[in-house]
Amino acid sequence: MTIAGIVFALMMTIMIFFLVINSFHSILLMCAVPELWSHWQLADDEYFHALVGTDALPPISVIASLQHSPLPPVEIAAMLLGLDYPRFEVILVVDGAAENSLGNLVAALQLYEVPPAFTINVRTRPVRAYYRSRTYPRLLCIDMPDTSIGDALNAAINAARYPHAVAAGPNVVFERDALLRLSRPFLLDRSVACASGILRPVSGAELRDGKITLRRGRGWVDGCQTIEFLRNFVYLRLGWNRVASNIVVPSNPVMFKREHIFGMGGFDATVEVPAVDIAMRMARYLTDNGINAMMPVIPDPVAWFVVSGDLTTIGRTRRAWMRGLRRALVHNSVMLLNPEYGMFGLVAMPYFWLGVVIAPILELLGYFGLVAGLATGVLDSSFAWAYLASVVGYGILLSIWSVVFQVTFLPGSDGRSNAARLLAYAVIESLGYRQILLLFRAAAYFVDRQPKHPNGQPSPSGVT
Image (tube, rainbow, N blue to C red; front, side, top):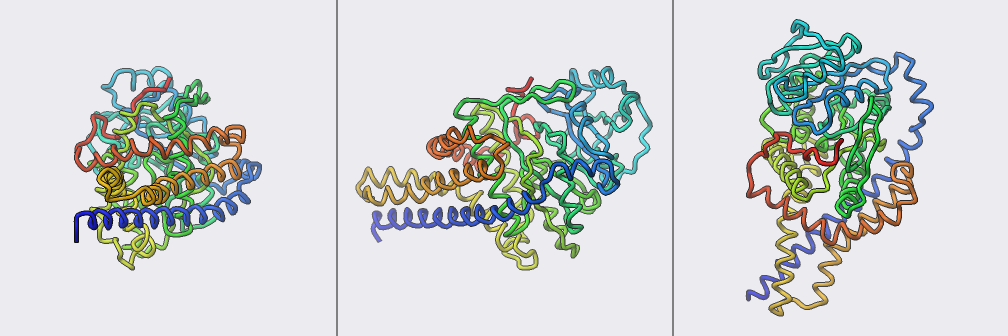
């Protein structure tokens, strides 16, 4: 076979690959429609707020690590303590040696040290001290040396009292009724092991006395991130509810049963993105122990994720996510194409390998091959248009589809008045922003080191 024949065969293979991947994405989007409809029928705000005064809702421990968080510790505590839920506690892990962390909490919340009367189910780094609040009895603060997010969450879950817990990411701002909505899957189905809600991007958030003032960016990067979140982190994940179980997106608010976390040995303290790792391990743990459980995503918007408009910070975050996913896939490779793990092993695992880990390399290779093929005359313009329609045009169509879903099913989240702006960003996102992210995701193969902040999250820019 000639070199021209090899190039043409390679480009045709890549084009078919992305036709299959994008077609699978379209199937997931179609599967999201019944999910949206069924939850829409149940999402009665008056009904859920009526449950606040009853004993039907399970008690919840809200755990969060404030180490490396860009949000002010006192305001985060006020936000979490102000959640609308009958029985819950808030456990915060802070580094007392860091500037303006524990000291501010002690002064603002009247903290006092208490003895460590907790059962240690998961080993962690030594804890300096535990603190209770004189003004907020449901608050517990843990002072630990600077450590990883996973280690901090293990310390928090050791000290938790309630059987259910919600892990809050360092850049996440909760809606007041977040716990009400996250607890709904557990009320409707006892087989639920964990559940997560919709996370929406915002460029900045100002917290005052637990009240949230959101600041939405108007730049093209902010708009493209909104489209990325809608497509990948909302509607595609809702489709996975109908196909297989879900993988928890990093920083998403997740409610889970503590017994399952203890059964797995806790969060892995050595990983950059513990949410990805714990989702893979939980799917494996449940099957290995014969527990027929689900990990659904609900379409209710329960929190905001403070993103950065700086491409360098976005690149660092995407590299961390890619490294975390690749590591989790390798460590749990026993599930790949293994029928014992059901649809997660037969469908989800191959998809994460092909559609998330390998796809960036193939797409970049395809762009270089397209340019080289056109320059040398190996490929003609008709093939180039067909290739771009399959890879880029199909992606634009999926993004537009996601915007239509947003405007139709969740008009209050972004408003119909912003539909035209979102549609414009749906096109822009695939014609520049996507290609930049490809470089960042591909760089995770070569820059195999953790960032300075072990959580791999955006920097404090945009947060006041």
